[in-house]
Image (cartoon, one colour):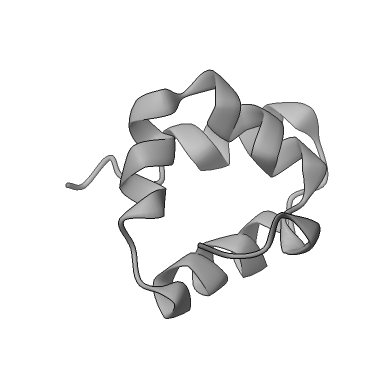
Length: 60
């Protein structure tokens, strides 16, 4: 898993609220995780981050 120092705080907090999503995220490759983290770094509000995290695995 990616080093916690690289994770945006809001992203980490949202993952903590969604253990099912956290588990799916943890099973991804480092490259897939890095892509998701990169997207999370572009998020600018709490509500947007919540939506971002909740929709990560909607298509699965």
